[in-house]
Image (cartoon, rainbow, N blue to C red; front, side, top):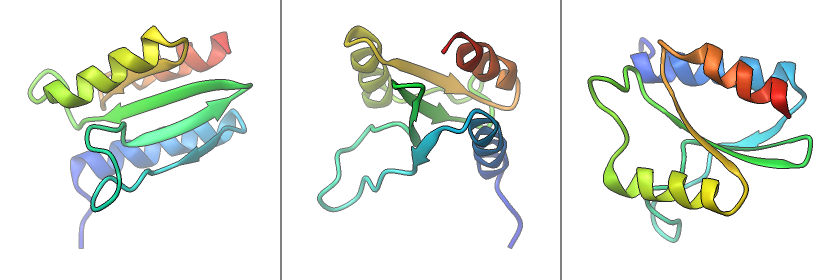
Length: 98
């Protein structure tokens, strides 16, 4: 089965995180998990990072619940970002600051 456009971006995000020796995982959101949690949760140099991955955020951005979670992450001192195929460089810029 071919990868979806979003899955291709997730793979690129993980490749970048590995370059920075990040600890990361894909949280389980069904059943007992919380909804709206970012697609990838990571820790880089002691900083919390939540990455919501989209194929193209301009066409289909985060849901209201996903954005609420990203805002909460940012408000509490972590970093919550939306990354798509068009802004992978933003992730690199963020990681370079950590």
